[in-house]
Image (tube, rainbow, N blue to C red; front, side, top):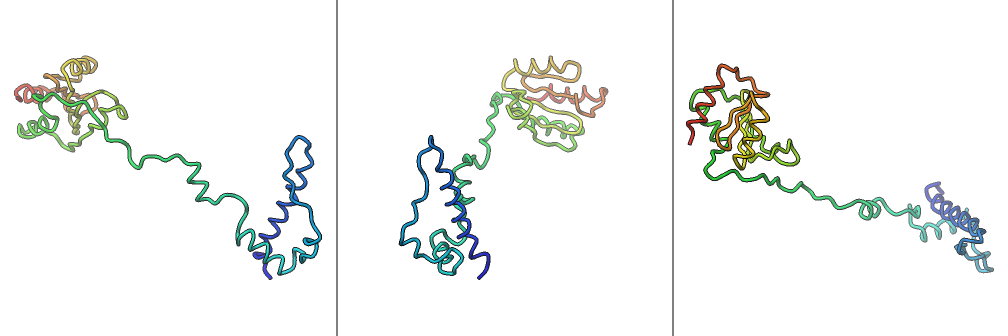
Length: 194
């Protein structure tokens, strides 16, 4: 006989004894185990193979009385969505150029636009929350497209000295490496863009 077969019976017996001992509290409802009867006294002692087999059949092979990990996980953890909802940015005006179109115009004019990447997710509430519709950054410049001229003007004023605005498009040089002497070339391309 192995300890693994005896352990469930011992755990069940210990739990029964503990619950019986707790039944002495007068303010607590009675939860004591039923008292032994003459039929119970004829049962084999708990260390016999028959008693162990009977306790194992009643309690299960590895039952501890606690809910299983699977049951605990299903009842206690909230159901989370598998992916965040899609980011909804304010639309740019129909007549405004896209940030990609501005970058393409810079490239066509022979201006540096290395390492171009779309960072529009920073426009929304989970990013910087600037309220822009589009944002494309390069190593030399950041191109913001706002949903309206009022928003574009507010941001250009906030970035005074390191930005240029035409309509709803704002060029930002704040974290860019474009030298001041080259900035008018970018601004002219934007100004001439339809």
